[in-house]
Image (tube, rainbow, N blue to C red):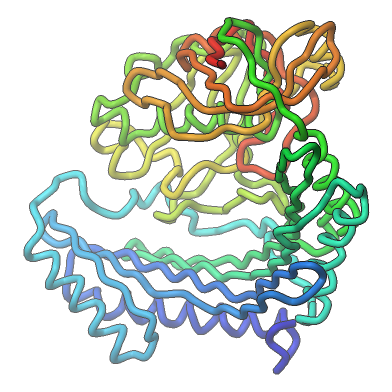
Length: 451
């Protein structure tokens, strides 16, 4: 691969052992200097290449990572980090964290996660599926994805390039409760972005594929052709008059619709009383037919993890069950603030899966009849405090269940509480490249501001 001194698996195994030793060393130094400590190392190594017009534009090898330590002493917290993993540097970093802790305020909720919640035995989720690939092979894949798009149609007049990325990482976590666990992971992606022109109108779009292994990626030909299809479909967009109409969030943007739920039910938003779902635990906030199941131990999953960033073991659970909110998403700190237990969400969520209702995307269009498909969203007009939602959008106008023409320069608006509660159905065209996996979502009505 981009490291040739030995077999890649052996290379990573050796790196993992060195990083585990560094974490153990840091914990040893911290033992006599503070009440409790947490140490984490994330090391990432990889290659990124990009091409333009079939020529190599960029080849970048990267290797980065640091050891971070957090100490707790007399209910005070201090943190420090170092990229130097020599014993002397580790000791200096530990001491720096201890010194910083002297100047921070006392906080009775500060401290490592409860021992009973820790992942003392981390399951192997097969997140490391790295393959040997040379820079030449990576360049070839990026170029093929780009050229496949350029060859589809004469209206594709320019390119923003093809790209290929391959990375592997090692994560090690340990704390003063005696936990020291690690796991390795890998990730590959390939993309293409082109520009099409028709009657003076220029549009761009892209396509990509991502996976834990090279074999999980779709072919460069698929990436290029999908990129071309998406770009050509956007040509000659129209504006819409201001109106209210049904809206379909295409799968790739529907994931973001549920992404707003993550922020609204995160423990930090709840204890700060800055969420519009403050009093919603145990209440129905989505339709009765909808369940959100979190599967952190999905084998090879893009958002799988045996433990969270505090070492708390991750567990499968229903976040929403038959429309009812089952839990907040809590770290150790936010859980203590709320008088509850950590749910293993320090660092984010893990593979939310939202089942479709047995409809194809075409059947969803027929069910909507006339309305808007949103394929791209712009801007950050979403309030976590009120749930008010207003974002720039583009997509397609549909009549009689058939796509009529592309639309752009519109704004869609509503309130997330109502949008979630009134969802009509979800199609089976599941977007699998995200930490939230769901299909296209049909909403009965939104405000559309146009010309």
